[in-house]
Length: 311
Image 1 (cartoon, rainbow, N blue to C red):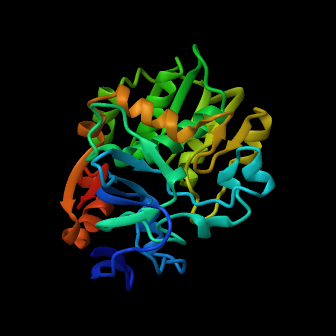
Image 2 (spheres, rainbow, N blue to C red; image 1 turned 120 degrees about the horizontal axis):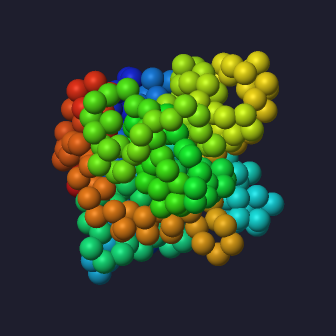
């Protein structure tokens, strides 16, 4: 089968044996390119496995599913209390980082990683369930509630999914985005008018300038939700942060609240937004065009939001 792997700071499409072992076989239909994939290619941590943690496909009987890409131990203290994103096994248990991911034709995954799709959700769009789950987790941790005034900084896929998740929670949301295509997408997803200050600020850009803006926009006593990954470290405007007594809430991946996973909530939100794929997925490429797809994903100024590989 064909699969996408790292190759000297970029990617290449290689031929690999069909996967074997215990689990459920999924014929993959869509895999999103995440900003984390691009950062990993540029780092010393470039994975030696098949890339891709945003994925959806079909079972042998044709049932469409999204795949939660965490294969956790289920036994440590974090897993037992539902915080399996903090599993003591670490990032080696994440598909596309420590385990083979979804940029391939087929994958075998544990049954508990399967997430059912609602009728009408296209499997070609369902790779969006994973970034939506990231947003749902952060919004849940930050306690976003009806009536909250929320600012989302960063108009990439995660920021736009956070916009959707906050509006579903009953909040009013303004989007601060760098590129025209991102702002247009935010308007279509219901972003409102900007204000002077906010009850909650969600930072999804991952830069020092974004953090500075986040603290400036937060009212005294506000909450700052960190959805971004800070690959180059973090410089926080500490004086303003402390003078305002802003509550900083880091967020990583997704977990479970009671019996319901963030992934299940995310799948429901994707189903409630039938035009989400049209708005967020700006480019689609066949799997064999992965090199071109990754180059396109890097070029945000040319309008790329979510770039998807299709098998």
